[in-house]
Length: 445
Image 1 (cartoon, helix red, strand yellow):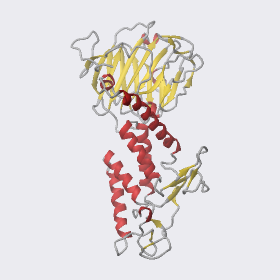
Image 2 (spheres, rainbow, N blue to C red):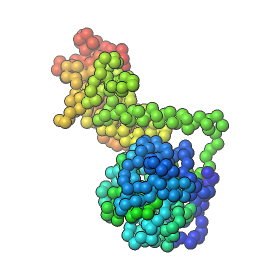
Image 3 (cartoon, helix red, strand yellow):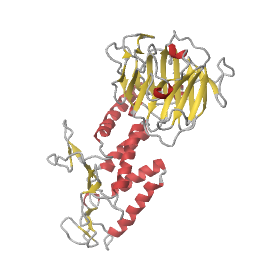
Image 4 (spheres, rainbow, N blue to C red):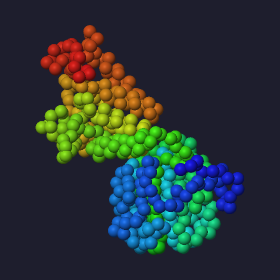
């Protein structure tokens, strides 16, 4: 795509205060839905048997009810509300990026002439991002929690009268870093400042043609049709900007490499329980083990903090994946690990080599006689929380590292070494054979 939206000095569309007019480039916003490197969800709705997405980074299956998949669309078929309140829902996760992204879709029907406010799209998480149509206005709305009658921020585009019997193109975009939103109808719209909530977790559900807000804003009526819906992981200016040209070989390899990385990272997401993982998993059953041997299969209530690829080391892949790919679902999972490590840390500052999760809380597997230093049981949680602190600036993680560091000093042998484990009852370090004060060089004690 060529350069981003061009600012224009005057438009037929009126704009709200502090908003700037924009005009979209090209015709990508009204053509058939196509997958690109930055697409997270692509719905052409051309399958008469289902409303499933053509492509999804998370899960492609569509839920919901009363949506006709056989209606004539703008470029083939479309999906259309067949009964009052009909809508689709998709999983959120990697399908929607709350920090920066863009949505495009085509809409046709009486909703454009309706006197009742109607929600056309919602990404629902702790907070929600939605597209609201009111008489004469199309709005990008950020709402808190379960409330849809109060907005965290709202960007209005005055649209006047719109023909209900023709397809109309909607583009909405958001960028947390710059605090900016965009909303456009048929290639023309506005950009303006938007306030974001402090909670940037990935939404868990996406509603198309209605959803949660429809209960308070008015359920959509039969005849509302949606077509050619695409979500992207970039805000509008970057999405429309000219990308730096790569050598042909790299241009072809990059999306393949990214897809492979996402596949591996998504497997880690699927395996995570309670913020953690077991030591290894057998294939293809994906049964977890608490140690290197496959005969040590353990139930999924066990979380491993042992060996070279215990829970903190596994979660590091998610943090790095988030830095490279910008996928909020990876950050969500990584932060669950960070919160688990904070919760599991003993008040004296150390961690056990494994934990069992119960309805009564986190139960460490080790006793005070065997607080393990070997196999990175203490070092990896410290490294990991340091990584989290560097990304988030949250002092809670730095405090946890400091407590661990103070305990590390207590556990040090008089000769300057550290042992296989520390015996808190006797107040001494011991090697694997129980010798007091013996230094350990094996397995990164």
